[in-house]
Length: 392
Image (tube, rainbow, N blue to C red; front, side):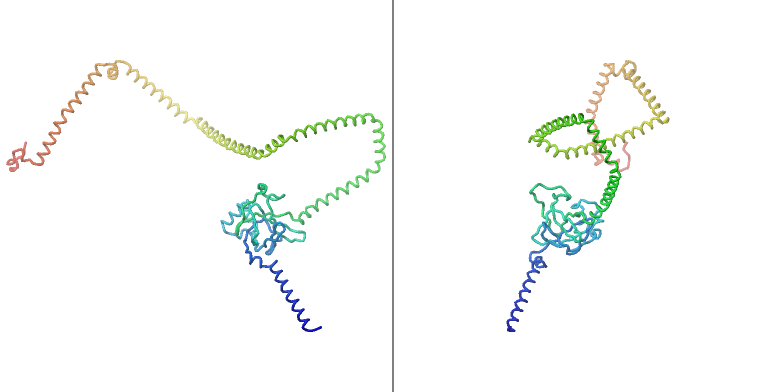
């Protein structure tokens, strides 16, 4: 064969190998991340058996990302991140510290929503994978949303709820003890049957004789059973007619729908009753303390003294009222004597008139004294003042 043909074929093979390698790298390597970009999400798990960096993350069986980091939850010290993880997962701080944090890079444009959870599943060979599934699927936590609805999209840096599927190996180990017990029970039953097989023939003869002797009773029992079956069939038809009604089915469905609300209201009522009973118990304890204080001899003595003082005060008030109602004494005369009241009224009017008449005089005296204080020469006694003769 010509050497150039061989070189050409080798070159074509190398070129084809390079192209296939580039295609594989583009499909399964880092190229999709470079082209489309990624975003990271974090998942809290009680434990992460078999989960390591590069563990695949799938949704509906399709690879959408890989795990980049697995850490203990207690190593994450950001308070805001811890509160967000606790809120999303619905756990306490103590439970959070006992778990692990898995960080995963999700390829764009794949999306994860808040009504989905990340479930860790393991195979019999120990391989682990993270599956993104809806919460309304069987065996998953959380309440399902409305049919056909879609939750909010989870963006980069947010938390995704996590759960762990049952490990097949642990299930087999749990079943091992039960299988051993079942085998032991079967072995014991076989031994008991073998032991009882010796008397089986005589037992069959006794059964045959019993059936022959009670043939008529058995026939009656069979006939009665037929009547009973007819009655049961009739009752079943009536029940089917009752439940088969659309209105009845709607009422039953509405009743079942309202049952959780009713249970919640009953729970709230019980809580309020407990609070009320606590208040009543506190009032009873206070009343007990009050009644115990009433039994104190010193307190009773003071109460008796106070009652006697109040009695004397009421007697004095009664005496004062009686004196006021009689015409004897000043108060009685003032209350009952109209002439004394009129005289006092006229005297007060005269005093008021006198005060009004004296007011201008007092004002004139004030003005006069003020002028004298400012200019004493107006009195005409300047020489006397100069001789330091006091004015009398």
